[in-house]
Length: 303
Image 1 (spheres, one colour):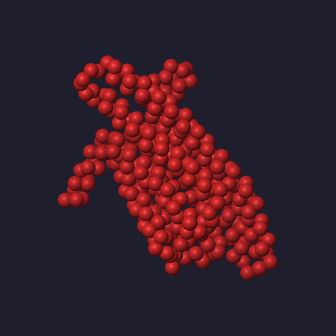
Image 2: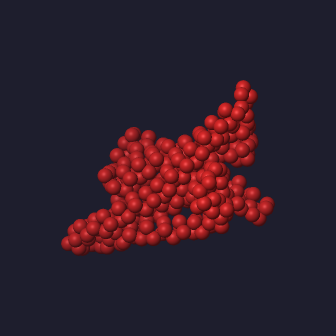
Image 3: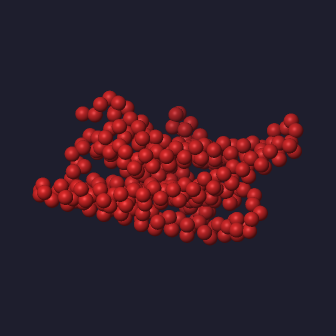
């Protein structure tokens, strides 16, 4: 039976999954409604839809897999049936990282004021690039997850056989491909993280400089445009902090310092889930249309 502390962390994880499901589901629903009406989807909406779907599925996999392994740990020895969770998690994790990165790159290119030729070229062609970048992210995420299929699922499938001697050999061999998978997964996670950092810093710097200019030009009168820039900076800064926390926690989990079946891993799972749960709420609250509809639904739900 799980301890009370384990149940607390599982409850927090369940709450985060619920918040992530509602937030990401709401974004997907609203964009789909707009698409049905206009039969058009902007580049930003395409990125948001891809990001929300990947996060929705990622949180679902995390929650279900943790419940299975905590309440029925014996299932971890049944082979590829449940180890598939690891492969799906790895794929969705990398995919959501890339989608979040492209969202920041999109905002950076669209909002920030650049004079460099390359950045101006990107600004003119971002609508053409977005679908191709997302398709590339799907392919890269799939390729980066392949080693886990070999190292985790393949060997565990063999370990479910009844030959004790063979199991010992395969258990030892199982760690060999994992040592190849772990650096690759960290490297593949670090690439979008670095792109995200560069884009965020460029955008924050541009917004800060523009806000300072507006402050110098406005005296004693509240400017809605300046307030919008400040809100954008707050939103981006919160996204920046959440992304860094997520990446650091992800590295700790990928290095497998604490085994998956160990309940001591749950606090890190909760911390890891904080980012995909909180960021959709930030996106909804900083988008005027989504915020207005969310308030309407909240009032309707609360009566």
